[in-house]
Length: 102
Length: 222
Image (cartoon, rainbow over all chains, first blue to last red; front, side, top):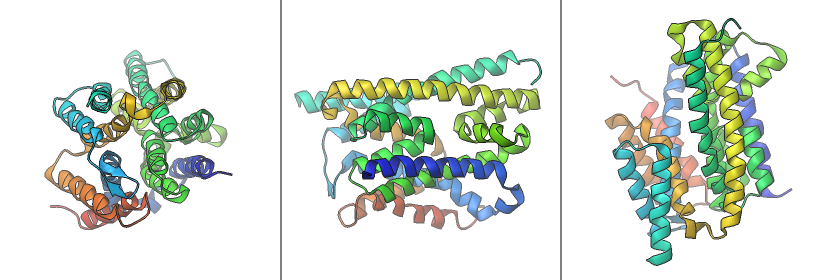
């Protein structure tokens, strides 16, 4: 079995287990204030790190290329409260333009 | 279920379609990262949690191990468990129905259900089921479309997919950055992950940022 298959199956099994656990565990066992507080912060750090690494990371190097321009435009689109698809498409168009014609 | 609440159903379906459209971005990102069309579609059918799916694809596509991909995706999936806690007393389901309810317990189904609170428990249930099934249908449909589209494209960079993926993550995290505290945390995560990138295996810099979440969340804020 390849690593990608392990990733697909492992992610799916744990994703379901977490969902099902929530539906089955009595609430009183999971009402730790600190854990709840940390849990709401986890998406912020993971998603921010993913943005950073995917924008300027290339294996173990940091590279500035067309991706950074695309994500910068996405930032502007978000600041202007654009819909999600405008954010993603504007990043793609900017990056593609620089990659193909830059 | 008693009579169907029209406003609830309208909201459910519009959320379903809009969110489902993002499936295109996921399908394309997964194929660009080297996943097959079958693997891409299975992630949407089985994992069915956007951020987790993007995470495993992002981490492994960047050369991370299966373990770091699974770990990152699973950390993002914990919140679905918390949604389940919130929804279980509303839905009151057992057996197979609980299995189905668990699978469609995501940001949107829970969000719409909670949004119906003033309309009563029946409207909450309807919001949950309609949104859950609706997003499931459209998310999977558009995942397939995106995967097929990306395969036809060839070089992902030529189509800007290399920037579309981080932009998609940015769009997911942006609404959470409402205060100075959250923005400081996000900037810290960016800096830590980039500082670690040259020194540790791919995927680890991302997981390492959970330490920041622990540090920032350890004490209650005033």
